[in-house]
Image (cartoon, rainbow, N blue to C red; front, top):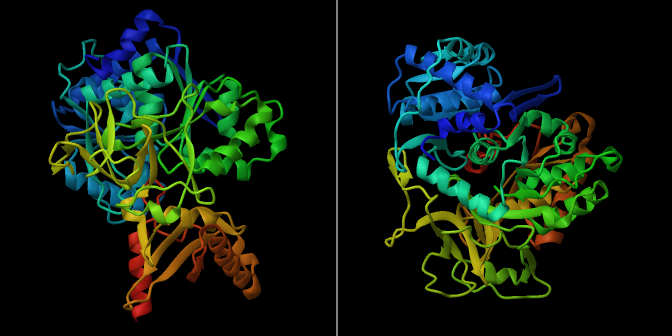
Length: 546
């Protein structure tokens, strides 16, 4: 890969009239061919030169996901700059956007923000926002085109700064180089068999590593079509995702675990009538711990529409490794095991138990990648922090060192174990709570709460209140579904709290001491939609102390 930005022109020489990217929303769809994309990139480069951005400058992009954003990103890279994809502002009270913008500007000081007039108006309405130098994407694209190869570079040349979500820490910029992107694309091709006749569909935001890599970088690398949906459209109507797979005969689509569960919860079975999902050969699930119950439920739900069980492919990855670290495939199915919950604490050996917690592997490492447990020294099944090595793994953050072990492996911050070459991910070390000597993961508590009717799935925080010596109390703060607060009386709210306690006790054997319900959208979240547990816990403890 000489330059990420040269790939559209190369594809245009082979298949000029083939579709490169499609943007879909409720009003219709817009498609661009490889030739049209290459011409858009050339024009955008002219606009950037007129703004005198220099080699190595960071250039931020805040635009709706679609061909224009792709062209702008490629133009930035072609001019030797480093692209930073940001979310778009949602309105004057968008505190998450304001925090993200301030954090990015403080960290990498972009020379320019590319946006559309609509984004500019929404940004201007946010009070106290960081002042930035901005440019209208359409004006940049109206400049005289630059028909030159992309700026020269090598495998170590930075091309993208991928900022982490910042749910527990200030967002940090992962430096993605040409070599890292190419390595991960080759690894995905080896694992999933990517080829130019594939079609990808994605609703995952392009400022997220999964969206950017699976919906933009890999399609560019292998020359296949990518169909981009808006995240809000999927959340509101998840059937749009499955319809897009059907209508475009998509073969590849990736999403986090919650998305598959969201489809099962929100889509009536009758809505699948007329859909044919037999084309979908890789339904990758990553970005969160993959739950066996989610895989089973979605497979059973989508089977009448032709979805094949072997298409569901759990994977493990992270922005610090470009994206993919492990992959199960239709040929190599993920292993399922049941383990004694008490044996899943750091330093213990995961022990089989027919009545224990069921776990699903995320598959073996992709080619040229190793995954171990820090300090395992070859101990099979030892639970601990996962460490990774591979050509797709970063050397560091922008202006910050990476958490490497003395022998050079990257510490992931994820807890898990390796069994017979397959990786089992338990959750983030930061999310692990020790309750009476046993490990408890926040995401397990949140999933149990979210299965209760009236509680909004995925929008809860769980933590331990341990202010009193020798006393630990589990606390849950959860959003109710839209409209619940207005419709429920005191008895209804009390019944909901009791149902949450009962569900957590039944699933996890844990007694929840305090359950607080709040209205929908009341909890603070990051731009990626992750609940900010640390802030919620701090606010809770402060109120209790007073």
